[in-house]
Length: 167
Image 1: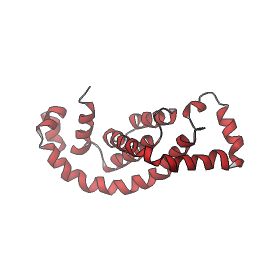
Image 2: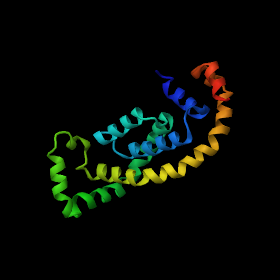
Image 3: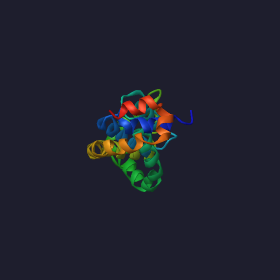
């Protein structure tokens, strides 16, 4: 089980994931990484990554990177959440209705940082997808050729799979 993340990464770069799948995984991973992990929102996005045909390597990698950066964004996300939860008085009935639903309070939407992080992640997801797709398309072939030659990839994927991925 220790090798599973490395196997996903190897599969992503030796041609098992398309640039669109990698970009979608990256965008969802960014969203998951920005949201505090103690909330149900984060867990739902991680489950979405696992349940869809997106690149697990790109998704979990982006989540890890965004998780490292998210504490630096807390002042911004707190302010954004405050604007939505407190300053936008017209939304108060919506928040009250959501809070009265059975599972929704576990999402942590009533926390300013959680809501602000989720909204920021949603706002960044589409641009992250559009900007990362050409990058993955450009570098997947060259990185894949280099990675395919590594003995570790042969061990992770098996010699036959590593060779077939190249052509």
